[in-house]
Image 1 (cartoon, rainbow, N blue to C red):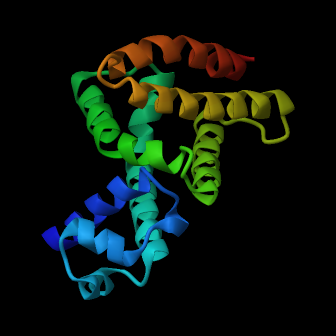
Image 2 (image 1 turned 90 degrees about the horizontal axis):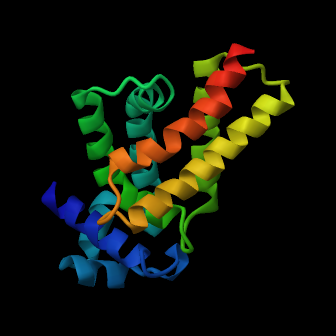
Length: 181
């Protein structure tokens, strides 16, 4: 399993610097330190590797989204939840930074936004025909994702606690008040 993990690590290092369509298997395997043929043990092509990584992220976000929603929206933040949030951010923020950044994947962005959107509507029992609710959800999703990118960019100077301190009042004003109407 270490071989596959090493290939994936090398992939993200390269993907951070260039678009997916410019990454070659030879370049990737040279960086990972394996013969090109080893790549095909795990992946069909570069796009398959990216798709597997995205699917893994979506599986994890499905598991973790309840913690995120409770932490952000209900102010339910115990040590365990905060640790989970930090672990999730530490593991997936570097990948999100790439996927949502200049070399990112637009289809991933759309899928992620749709997943978040569906969960917010379900969490708050929002009416899908309410344009103001829809506007609030879109504002939250786009603002939140951009704020996460900013947070990651300055991760050495900003903590998850700082992030929650800034983002939570905005979220509460948008959704909690909207949900009480």
